[in-house]
Each structure stands twice: as structure tokens, then as C-alpha cells.
Length: 358
Image (cartoon, rainbow, N blue to C red; front, side, top):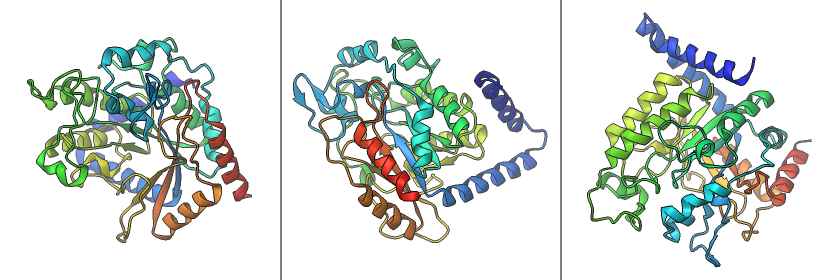
């Protein structure tokens, strides 16, 4: 069975489940699938995350200067890079050494059970073919390949479960992208305005719902229906989005992927598991609840060659053990380079983790 046949069959199966003649039976089946995934997640303990996109090309630097933020993937916002200039990076994005099966083998050998990739980060650029926006790896780059589709296939081939990150709120490529704080979001996400206000002034007509309906919802549906079974969907930074909109996204996940977990950063307590802040381990956990600690190998999530502050294998194993002691999973991030390779320092860590298992 080729990838297209697999995906088509999976989509047909999901669609059939969604239009079941017996809604009660369909609901029970969905609940059972979700409980099965929760059990798997609890036992999995260890996963890999990857931040990859156009921001790998400048690598945390712009116009001869280091970006003001440690996170390379925030470069556009930190340096107020105009969309016209930033989007031009797509013309140079051609990761000819991208080998997703090799990525998955590194993850599998290190003991990781699942893999989560940034299908769309805050810059708005998608690593999948999208009808909702041409600002994607297939339509806007010389590479022209569906990265998420190839990763999904590599996951199936190596036994790694696939999860997808999607920035549902922030989108710097959109005039109505999120980042404006609403009252409900102040407590958790600070007070700074994270919208693209250098291309589109903050005091103009602004309506987050336009972006939400035109791009966010269609793209979430695309990633839920195009790549087979997902173990989880990883949302991030709910600052502008409102509770009813989060409920809509949750309902979409339940409809198209009944067994797919939703992380806590969907917002408003609607997720299936808790995700503390970046590189933070929960102070305490509640019995019966699921937790996941997300951490970087160095300081940046996205590729930043000048960031050589990598953790040692021992440090990572200590974090992993501490997470396990409180019942939390640990998801360790890798930032692939512009050619599609894991940095040598990251490979050394992954090989060290694999050796520690033997």
C-alpha cells in the first residue's frame, strides 16, 4: 500500500466513523480510542519534538546581528522583519538532505516513542500542502515536497507515533493573526502584544476571527485528515483565541481523530494533558492526570548554530528520570538545520542516549 492509498483509506475510515448511523456507539468507540491513547501516552514516557521551518535559514541572525531572543524561531517577531523580506526565505528553502526515516531511527534508538513536528509555527509558514494558504512548503519553495506527509510515512515505517504541532493563535503572516492579549489570557501569557504590528499597525481594524475562520480552522482540519492517525496535536500560546473558538478546535479533533490527545496549550483547561512552561517540570502532579515536560537540547528550539550550550547526556537522563518520578512524559526538542540534518551535537546526544539503553 502506498502513502496515498493509506491516507485515503484512513480518511475514509474516519469519515465513516463520523457519520455512523449509531451516534451513541460512535461516541463510545471514540471514548475508548481516547482512553487507549491516554494509556499509551502514560507508558510512552519519552518523545522527540522538532522545530523546523524558514527560520532555520537565518539561524537566529539578521542583517549581521544576533537576534535579541534566544529562540531562533521567534526571529521575525524579535527583529520586526517585514513579511516581504521574511517570506522571500521560502525561495531558498531547499533541504535536499532531508531524510525523515533517519530522523525516526535516531528517535527510536534513543528510546523515544513519539515524534512531534511544527506543521505551522508562529511565522505562519506550513510544512504541508494547504489549500487554505499558499504560504507552504509545497507551493512556495523549490523543495516542493510535503514534509509532514513524508514524516508520517517514516513514522509508520519505524514504529514511531506521530504528533503535530500547530500554532493556532499567533501567525505573523496574517493581518488578523493572534497575539493580542485578551482578559482571559493575561494570567498565563503575559501582557506583551505578539502580533505582527510592523506590517499591519495595531490601531487598525483587527479581527482575529477572520484569521481563525479563513486559515486556522481549515488548516487544522487538513492536518487532522491528511496524514493518518495522530497520537496528539500540540497547540501553543493561546493569547487572543477565545473559549468558544478553542471548543471548536477541540470538537474538530474529536470528530476527525477520536483517539488523538490534545495538549494543555489549547487553552482554558480544555486539553487532555498538562504542559508546563518551556523547560519546566511540574512542581506537583495530580493522580490520574497526564503531564508532559518539553525541553530543548541547547537554548533555542529552532536551529541556531551559534547556540552551543548543549546539555550533556547525563543532564538529559537526569531530567528524564525526574519527569518519570512525578509521572510526567519528557519530550526533547531537536532543531534540524536548513538542509534537513540534525546538528552534530544533537546526534551525539541521541547516540549517547541510545548507548545508555544498552
